[in-house]
Amino acid sequence: MKTFNKVERKRLSEQVADSIEDAILSGSVNIGSTLPSEQRLAEQFGVSRNVVREAFKFLQERGLIDILNGSGAVVSQPNAGLTSSALGRYLRLIGAYESIDGLYEARRILEGSNARLAAQRADEQDLATLEDCLTRMRDHAGSIERWSQADLDFHLSVAKATHNPFLSVLLEPLVDQLRDVIAEGYRVPGAVGKGLDAHIHLFECIKNRDAEGAYTVIMEHLHDSEARFRNAVVKLSSDTSKESQIATKASM
Image (cartoon, rainbow, N blue to C red; front, side, top):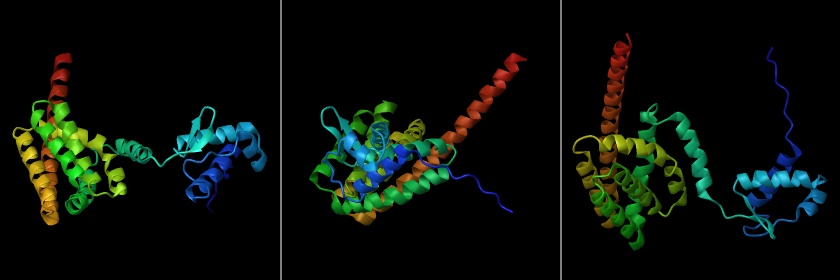
């Protein structure tokens, strides 16, 4: 017969934090408003001020409140960066090298939609931002760090050009994983020129409101990127294996 583990009781501070969080998320407490004082909340919840103080720490870590000197606890504006950071930590645990299939499948789903929507919704500011990214890619073709950053900024700018904040939040955590992808691909002869051409073509499709053309370009670009990355990983593994063999022989 199945045995069950004991139920762990939440600390009072967590229970208080959960109750305040529910009030914030339900809209009962408005963004920018100041929460009641520690003493008043302690009286309402029937707990000590220390419990409320600890609850505030939980809420601050969740990005729901800011503690301001002289003003107390203020309900903060939603911060997409916190969500992206949490997803980013999860993705780092998985690792791009260990889940290439999953990484590129996610990119195709997200960036395919991003390209289509950006072509339909991008405004003049979005186009100017994308053009600036292309300029930086051209200017820094000889620097792997600056090139990679400009490349990443371009993809994030496409996501922002959809004017759907959820798409940007979902793509941003992939950025750290993509740094390795772009860096490995950068080292492949001819990759810089081919990558720049693909980005320029995508920009032109977005600028000309060609949604299907933008989708086709990003799909082809991602297919090419995946192939380069896989080849780079195979080469890296081969080189590492050779170095290991040489080191082994040298130690014999």
